[in-house]
Every structure is written in structure tokens, then in C-alpha cells.
Image 1 (cartoon, helix red, strand yellow):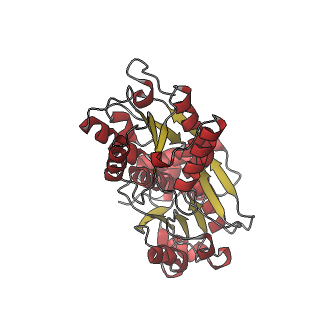
Image 2: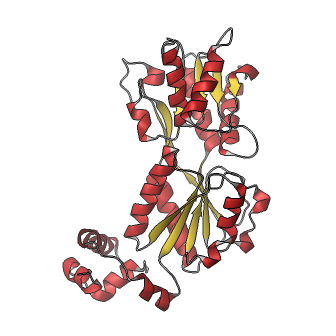
Length: 339
């Protein structure tokens, strides 16, 4: 038998109206009451009647998460967290994988009107700022990622320039001076932002950015990291540290070093970006920039649900906190440090 509002109310010891207010995220409910109701919803497995909600409020209860791919663990971890938190708020997440195809990404902007979707969380990869017209979005939309996003829309992202600068400074603090970088550098993208942060740190340290040490790739995969690191190791004087613009490439770089008998971090230190779980289990464990995904998803859903409910506030850029997670790939086995 399906769990009803009254069942949740009885379990939580509150009124049916209170449960309804929590499910529909109405204001003026105490944090303690809201937490108690949400706990009962989770324990009983209550699911809102989406058809009834759509008839009453003109909303379906569905939101879409549009990401370039799930082969990158960062997006898989993001999708898992969005799904769990959206469900607690009474929404069902639908997943749209665009494969970074420009036509598919444009459909996300233009085609949601016919999909019975209340709102969209969108991480574009191929679109330019001119492709995004805030007045023509098909549904309330919150954008993710360090992309060229126009003003006037909600945009939640890590400050990749600052984070990359801090990671490069960490490598410099270890006495490394020949530092390379692997990642995309064309256009206004996450990769170009991370390259900018890298370059700033090198400049501040009075060190040159050696052209041969910068490897650009359009694919942020293990294999691309492996190939680009192999190319760096073939140089007459290889770098003594490499900053990869995501963890998958850093994992590939670790593999390239292992294949050639290059010791990490003794001969070369390697760092990544994204804080994916896989990095903790590498050999050696990977130093990385770890964004606060909990914060990111909470702010994204907060912004999106406010838009769904009719908020006309000015679009806001929200910066996501991050930290350096320092492990053996830069510090060595004796450190055992994670910050």
C-alpha cells in the first residue's frame, strides 16, 4: 500500500498540513520540524503524488540534470548527490547526457518546454555565452561549471582560477620549479580558467611557464592523461611536477609514470582537480582540489526551486568552497597527510 501524507504526519507527530508544507517547501517552518518530517518521509518511503501536484500547482515535480557525460566520475558523483537531495525535497531528477554536443546542449535550452520539466540544472561544455539568452530559456535554469555564462542567470561554480593557483603554489612550496600542466586551454572553459590560475602562480614565483610543459587536450580521460604525461617524460628535461586539470587525467599520468619506472613523487609530483573518490585509492593516493559538492548541490537546488516557485530575483553567481586534499602523490609516503 502506498504511503500517504497522513501516514507521514502520524509517524512524525505533526499535522497533515505541516507535512504538505514541508513537501512543497513552504517557508516559516522550523528547522527541527522540517528535519523531523523529512526523516519520516525517508523512513517510510513516501513519494508525492506528482499528478495531483501538477494539477494543483502547475508543476510536475520533475527536474532535469544535463551534464556532458557520466564517464567522468565527478559528474556521476554530482548526479548521485543531486538525485538524493532532490528526492528529499519532493522532486524527481531526470538525467540528460549531452555528450558535449552543441546541438544537444541547445536542445536543453530550447526543448524543455515540451518535457513537463519544472527546471534544469545545466553544465554546458560546447555552448558559447552568445548561445545562452536568459530571456529565452525554456524553463528555470541554474548553470554549473567555469564556463562562459552570461550575466542575468543563476550560476554556481568553483573559482577554478583561485583553486588552480593554490594547487600550483603547493607544488612550488615543495621546491618544484619545472612544473607542467595537462588540460584543455582553448576558449572560455574550466580548463582555461585552471591554466590561468597556474600561470598566475608561476608568474608570482618568478618562474617561466615553459611552452613544452603545457599539454592541451580536448578529452579529460585517463588515456589522455597517460598520453600527455608520456610526451612530457620524453622531453630532454622533463618537469619535476605536473598539475592535471582533472583527476582522471592525473590517474592516467600516474599510469604513464609507473610504466616508465618514474617514481611519484620522488622524481615527479602529480596533482589533480575534482576530488573524486577514485583518487583516494590510487597508487600513490592523489593530491587534488576537492570542491564542496554538498554545498554546490544545496545552493543549486535552492536557486532552482526558488525560480520554479516564481522568484524574479536577479541572477546570482555563487562561488563553491574548495580545499586542497594533500596526499602521497605530492607529499610522499611518510606524510600520511590529508587536508
